[in-house]
Image 1 (cartoon, rainbow, N blue to C red):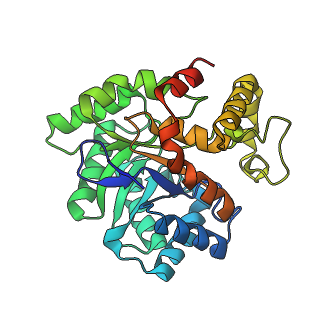
Image 2 (cartoon, helix red, strand yellow):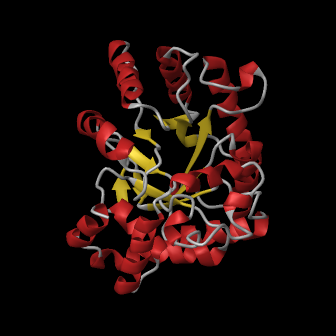
Image 3 (spheres, rainbow, N blue to C red):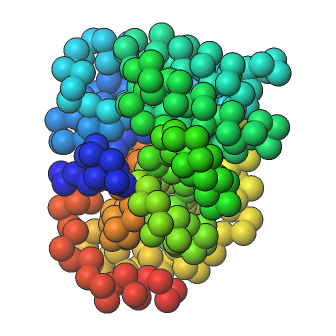
Amino acid sequence: MDYRKLGNSGLKVSELSFGSWVTFVNQLNQKSAMDCMSYAYDQGVNFFDNAEAYASGESEVLMGNILKKLNWNRDTYIVSSKVFWGGEMPTQRGLSKKHIHDACNAALRRLQVDYLDLFFCHRPDPDTPIIETVYAMNDLLQQGKIMYWGTSEWSAKEIKEAFSCSKKYNLRGPSMEQPQYNILCRERFEKEYKNIFKKFHIGSTIWSPLASGLLTGKYNEGIPAKSRFKVKGYEWLSDSMKETDFKKIKKIVSLSKKLNIKPSQLAILWCLKNQNVSTVIIGASKLSQLKENLKSIDYSEIITDEIIDEINNY
């Protein structure tokens, strides 16, 4: 496992990380989730991603119980949370100073840790001035409750404003952004964020490298019964299939066969080839799936620039 700097910070994250979105609670119980986390850690994964919104906080409860049982040294792993969707009440949502503080304290309790390594603004909040959010995150930094703060699915304009506020008031700006990035979803990461990476040198913890499983090829003939597309509350994922370029996916599957690797491994390696990617967050609904995805890095040398160009031209 290789490690990459998180932007211009001194923090080094494993190039592959493990996330809990959809799978924890919904598809993985405590034993299976612990097996996955333990295996990932043993393979060199040091970053475990979570959020207050995942399974309405229960994902963090599950991960917290596992962290307590595994009893890893706290200085050997990175854990994150995200703030935005904490409940149905007006004060439980968004990026107000109150909710950011409440969400951080709640995440610390659920995850059973003294501090969060990474704390993300899960989405931009049009109802809260960005300067208020920046101040709130800096309060948490000064209190030692978080080490770094970042954004998730913010526009380049919003990220620039966060940095502008930080500079004006001598505050810490975001260290990382967590966007969706995969072979089927490239526009924002490669074009909109191009100058953001160049000017501010932020890190990125990308999600959905397999486009919610579409890039494995298993959806080419329909939705399997035990797919995340069938998980209650995530039916909206199936809507993405309506605009999916299945011809492109079939070409990916065909190319992976020629290279003698899995389509999922090819998709993950494609993401890692982009040097603006700090870490690729992978998920898994079972241990065998996790093992297959983590094995991707064993084939990194066969993914040449020519292969990348071929994929980009599909």
